[in-house]
Picture 1 (cartoon, rainbow, N blue to C red):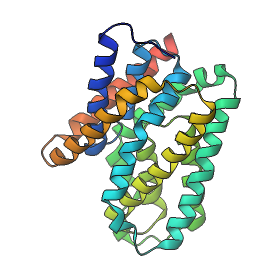
Picture 2: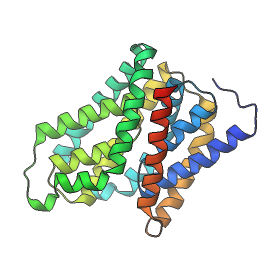
Picture 3: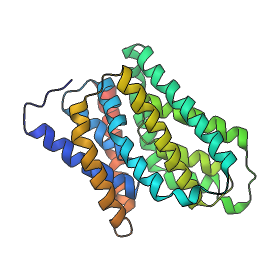
Picture 4: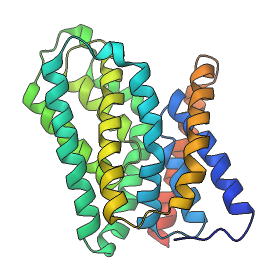
Length: 254
C-alpha cells in the first residue's frame, strides 16, 4: 500500500477524482485520468489498476439509478446481458490475479492505447455501426458474447469500458440511444460491483486512495451532470485521449 507522505499526492488524487467524475458524466473515459495519477504516487501498475476500478464504481451506481426508467420494456435482454456482465467481469478479475505480473505489464499499455483510440473515434465508430433507427435486427447471441468479452476487458482493465459497452450495444441491439445508454450504465454498475467484491477479497487495493477518490468522484459526477449541456464534451474527451496515449507510450518506453 502506498503511504502518502507528501501533501502533493493526496491533493492530486482529490483533484483528479473530481475531474474524473465530471468527465465521466460529460464525455466518458474519466478513469483514464485516475490511472496515471495513481501511477504518479508510486503505485505499481497492478495496484493502480485495481484501486482505480474500485474507486470508479460509485459513479456507475448514480448513473444507473438516474436512468432506471429507461431500462423497462425488455427484461429478456436485461437479464441476458447482466448475466454476461457478471460472468465476464469475474473472469477478467481472476485473469488479472492469476496471470504473471509480466503479462499485465505487457498488456496494459495496449489496453490503454485501445481505450484512447476508442475515445478518439467514439462518434465515428457509432456512425459506422449505424443507428437503431436504421432497422437492423437484434442479434442476441452477438450481443451477449460482446458484453461477455467487454466485461472480461472491464474486469482485467476497466479504462474506457463504457465506450466499449455502448459500441457493442449500438451494433447488436435495436433500440433508442437513450435506452441503450441506460443499459450501458446498468452493465457498468454490475461489472463494477463484481470487481469490487473480487478485488476486495483477493487484490492489493490501496484503500486509502479509494477513500480519497470516491467522494470527489461522486461530487465531480454530480457537478458534471449539471454542466453537461454547457461544457465542451469533445474537448474533454480529447484531453483524456491525449493523456491516455501519453501514458501508453510512457509505459512502453519505461
